[in-house]
Length: 35
Figure 1 (cartoon, rainbow, N blue to C red):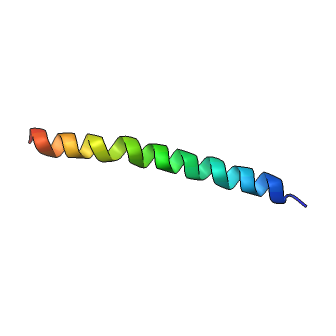
Figure 2 (figure 1 turned 60 degrees about the vertical axis):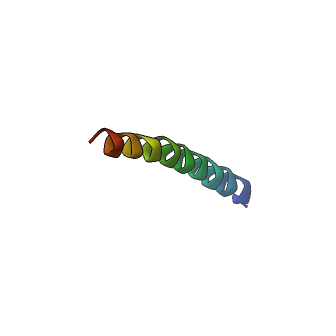
Figure 3 (figure 1 turned 90 degrees about the vertical axis):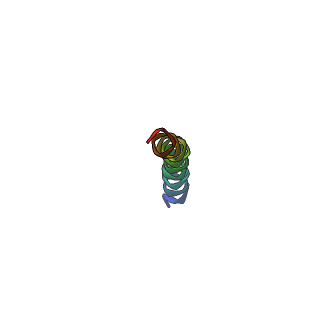
């Protein structure tokens, strides 16, 4: 069973997604504030 590998991949993907959103949201807010 590759359940652990799948769970690790899902956790990594979720972490990357959170990181991407966490960095993009302030950047968009800052860009909107400047304009």
